[in-house]
Amino acid sequence: MLRVRFAPSPTGFLHVGSARTFIFNWLFARRNGGTMILRLDDTDVERNTEASVNSIFEGLRWLALNWDEEYKQSERLNLHREVAQAIFSKDMAYRDFTPAHAGEAEKSGTQGTWLFNPDTRNMSKQESDRRAATGEPFALRFRVPREQNGEVRFNDAVYGEQTKALADIEDFALLRSDGMPTYHLASCADDADLRISHIIRGQDHLSNTFKHVLIFEAAGFKPPQFAHLPLLVAPDGTKLSKRKHGPVVSVTTYRDAGFLPEAFINFLSLLGWSPKNDREFLPLKELTELFSLEGINRANAVVNFKEPAVTPEDTFDPKALWLNGEHLRALPIEALCDRLVPVVSDAGYCVSPEKLLAITRLLRERIRLLNEVLAVGDFFFVDQLPPYDPGELIPQKGDKEMALRALTRAREVLPTLEFKHDSLDHGLRAAAQELGLKAGQMFQPIRVAVCGKKNAPPLFETLEVVGKPKTLERIEQAIEKLQ
RNA sequence: GGCGCUAUCGUCUAGGGGUUAGGACGGAAGAUUCUCAAUCUUCAAACCCGGGUUCGAUUCCCGGUAGCGCUACCA
Image 1: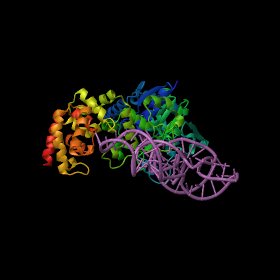
Image 2: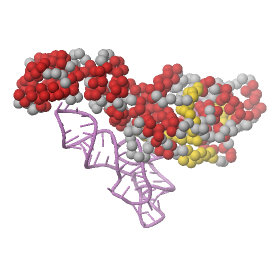
Image 3: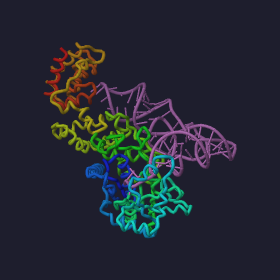
Image 4: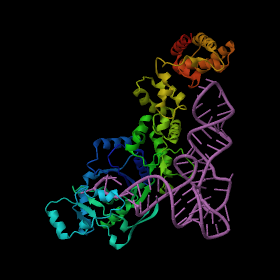
């Protein structure tokens, strides 16, 4: 039975790297009829927050990819301790009475590599037992059998055969001095207990995997299949981090900007994985059918945002924006309209369903993010147009006088027309001809008058939606502006 | 410092002992059009460096360089 897990540690919001790991696990599970497990790796009491747990669920809920089982490591501490005890009883771990953080300076700082502390590693069983009996706190360390001169090996589904000399692996901790399991122990104990068959996770764990193999074997478990994913990095090449890169790496930033979850998933799936058939636009269904571990790449992938990020162009990878536009346009018009409802109402606008549907039709090819309807189609929603430069009313190769003539003629003609595409088309073209204007020279002043900007959807359809009273009112205002 | 991993257009990637090194985004130009967008066409744009192996390497091997990761009683 194929079982995979996504195991975030709740120390911040859900970021895109984690989301991608989740997505790859999900795709793999669904592709192969396996079980998707969500496990909160919350053994670091110091750094875990409830807010982070909520934020992770919030992000996952938005993705709308379901999981089948759910666990919390903090509720499984007995299991972790049992596994630690089993390893200790085989003498493959030992007590380290060094106070926490005491050896930090020598360990990490300078040039030498810290591997173990001979004093504690070689402490006699009698002394160890005696000191433990007095209640002196200790951490439990794995006794890496370095004297065997052997190596640890495993076969990674992405990176291939991996080996590392035992002599290069330090005596890592299994239990902290407060009795809490470390990540390595808890993770392996749970993976074994939950019968995880494939561990798909970030490449930052590739080096750790040697330790994990050691734990699995010491505890008598068969290690699962590992598949490490290349990291998602910022344009500067460093690993995406919440601290360094801020909200641009948060899943909720994408949600709040008006991404469609299916587009977001599509975008992330293409970072570090390829279907190898030149397809880029991939709905979830196809992604699920196409996904395989063989398509996973080994080199880190850059999420191409710009810093400092202010506009969507800066904040999001251009391909993400493009893909979202594609997914937007692939949606049936009613479905897109439904997605737009909360965007419009959250902005404080009140529009009838029929009108919003008509607006959706006009805007769908002009937006890449849901929220762009607000900026691109503001004139559909507001009563009073925001201020604009009256100079915009002046058409190509024309002057103020021409704009005025076009608008005054429009003011005369429009009341007599039915506000439907064909009627407006005939009426306004005829008017242009009478005035000796090109169609564009007639239309632009009207467009700017009604929309408050030069770039907008086609004129007749737009007027149809804006309606006769508002159109005339805005033309009137434009004429005043020009005079 | 030690160990591990990686290296194809600006970015995401395909490919692989002999190719005009393919696609996508983005960029440029053009077509279409009442503007914009969408759409279509075209163009510019890459095999990190040095040694091998070979008739022939971007591809295989070794070395270098660079980047990233791990090196915590974080995960």
